[in-house]
Length: 130
Image (tube, rainbow, N blue to C red; front, side, top):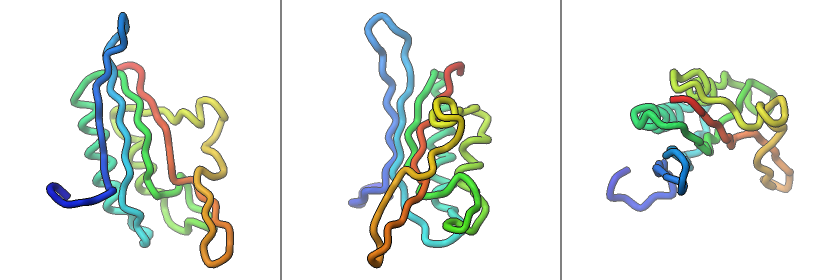
């Protein structure tokens, strides 16, 4: 929310390397939904991706989606936030899939109620040709 203190952010910067072409770099840290709907992440992530598309520059985006890439026993719901971003017209590619052949088994590891919890909720994607 504007004019309110929050750690829920989306930032976009245009960088121009010396002798290189300008590119957009973005990052998000969004609200952790405790429901399967993920509606706030979908809206915020789509808004960030749409703003990147408007810049018409090659881009890299790091997303803390707080959402799984696929349905599983630890995420028993459809991967709406992940799908909404990865199927956007901007045609983003997962850096993990490109380098490893798949999204990693986890990107965060936390201890909750004395038990270790591992989830894939953070992503790095790129789009090289606007």
